Image 1 (cartoon, rainbow, N blue to C red):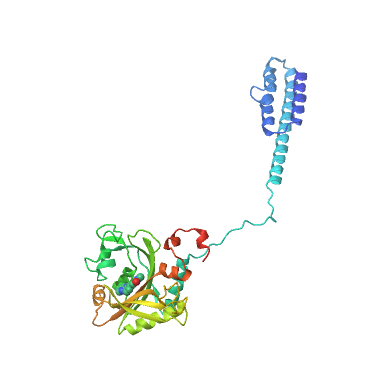
Image 2: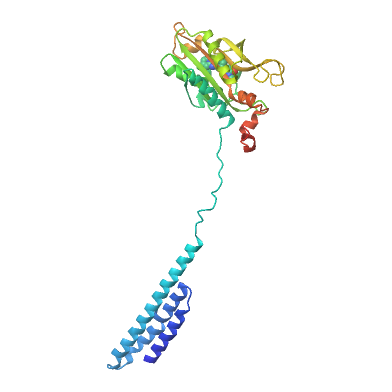
Length: 339
Ligand code: 2NL
């Protein structure tokens, strides 16, 4: 029996020596020392031995078991260490490797123009006002003196949400909110997105951008409107730029005007950009209609105001000579990277 044990020990130790995986060592442990293992089954036969033989055999058996366990454990440790070193060698980080190139984005041309225009007005003491894109019919049409049968109110021109709400068709409701809420004097500009039920083509987009301005206080005059816009276009298009006011009609201003500037490409000579006119229309403006002031809780006998509005997309297209508004909203990086 003792010889059997010692032979098993020799065999097991030999096997362990050449093992290269933890799994193999573990199955060897089960094979010899497990519940149904070879050494375990020998030990079970110890009951058959005489009282003198038993302690001797017991001692040998324990020594064999301890030797095997020791050898198994140290082999496992050795294999774990090898595995760890292999991983460390494999996962080494090359700190000299060049970093991944990443590209920095840039401002969309429309955002560039919005920032440029708002900066000019902030420089003249205006603050920036913002409001929701989903507006009430009251703020978008009623307060602005739009006649009940005005074509812009039509279902086919405006995105209605329900009987009270719509997607704002201009940024004027932002100024309406300002007049209803804030103390006078008011001097704000409102840049933002607007929506009209238009089929997209080279000059129309159902989503577009506007910047409107509003000044309300005591003795605000048309001369100040002209002076403000004159200064603005000189800052935006250059010192030599001149303005021309042409009579127009808006429901929310009286009197109203469309404002042209001398072509910033030909300085008024006439070119392709201005279609030979020498002038380019860029703004609408006027004195705030007394009804609008009244609708917003301001007494038109005591106070007056001027307002103006411009299409940001149109100005962007003029400045960068873009001939199709849809290009501004397709977000093709090959296009946008040019500005
Ligand atoms: C244009 C013309 C304009 C206004 C907008 C305005 C706002 C209030 C009261 C009175 Cl709260 N007027 N805005 C006035 C005149 C013209 O825009 O061609 N926009 C692209």
